Length: 310
Image (cartoon, rainbow, N blue to C red; front, side):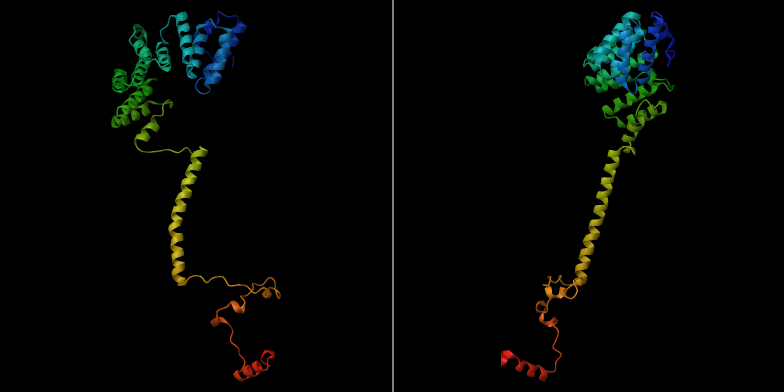
């Protein structure tokens, strides 16, 4: 990175500085441009370094303004944009200055700026930006229907595609949703998607939302955990009827309730401690006790000779 990556007009502004200083400022401004859309806080830090080195260069003040705007430091951004405008006399920052007023909670001021003569001096892209800001101010003030009307313009009706076309169509579709005109909004989100060659909007997601389609991020661990939990619940619900059915089937097959546990004869462990002991004879029902296989006369004789009967 040498600083030569900057626009030619910015490099010309830096020529008023000593060479070494100009190179340092240029490198910081390059970093601001690279990080502004992805790492706004880091871009703001580089912009502040450039500001300390060359606060009297309009391009530096503008860079600080955009970095502050991206980090929602709207008061600071507005002050820097005003400073840059005084230095250059240009009106190109007028729309973003009006949007800073919105950020500060003053949509009426933004709307007033949309009617100032400076707007007529803007190029076509600038006028579209001003229209977007004005529509946003209308919605901030609760005037959703007026926001729809504000965005209706020849630029919106044109079939030609410009860098601002996708954002204009998207804003119009979003405004239509706000007033309950979802069928029309679906068409305009589709048109915004056609013009959005760089993916600057989430028109595809909004269109899918209106169509009733929901996407799950496969790389999102929270979404994956939630999906696993839902699958587990579904499996549990599917298993419940089967378990219930098996229990009923088991009861029907047995026909009787399970018999209560029988007491165990401890002496049964003496011959083989690893053998499952059998219930004691006195615990068995009478009809399950072994019958005496001695002859009847033998049983009578032996019973008579027992010591208890002597």
